[in-house]
Image (tube, rainbow, N blue to C red; front, side, top):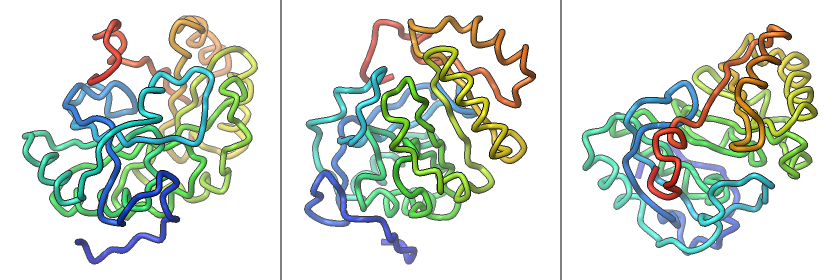
Length: 231
């Protein structure tokens, strides 16, 4: 294992050991979100999430999966000739072993993204991890779960994402972006809830307000609209 050690809390999915991760699926696809969109990427999707966002599109990851050692996952990820790896979920930071997994992948020269809800302390991840933090808007039903202290834990290379369901969500996100100066510090992405908010409407609001943010569409849903898993 790497010399770096995590201070993450015990996993809420009851991990049997700190060197294993409960994984729902592993696949290679095109990265569909963040500023890394369009790049080939190995995805390690963890099982389990304590949030229940109204528009969640990966509910299948709440349960099931198989437990793998960190060594197994690192070797599998490195078996693909793909430099980019994302640990996603579910909520990866529910599992205390995920920071160690990220550290091992970094040690093997991988660019490591971790997509997290922002409800868990992101500082447990090792230096060099690119954290994609999804702040929950009111329309998600989980806005109160945001750990706003994470806004001060963000570092160079991190990104902040807002998923927007309606005008109220947009106003909330815009206020957060401006109040905390997020657009001056990190890439900020705003994405419409799939099938609920038309992208051109969200684009019009961004343009009207000159919001320091980037409109994000879920590329994988455009490429494979009828496929849920493995994209």
